[in-house]
Image (tube, rainbow, N blue to C red; front, side, top):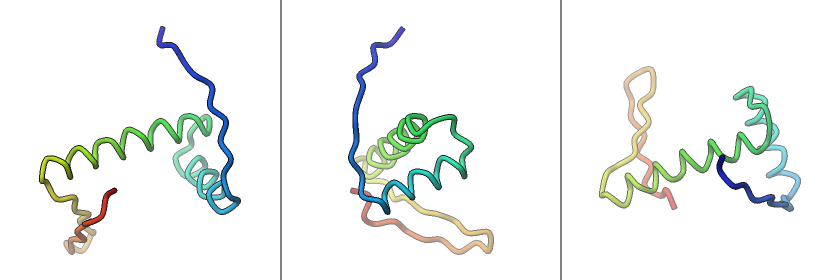
Length: 71
């Protein structure tokens, strides 16, 4: 079993509302699950940027949006 560490966060109200909204949208079981999933995604995006790759979002209509600032 992986060792865990308890972390206490103080978030401004708007950030907490964003966290709550993400939990609801993703049907996550906990805030911890939302944060773990967010870390995985952020780590992957940073890895791609560090490798010199571009991160694009392709819309349903085929338009592409380039994200230049990942971190």
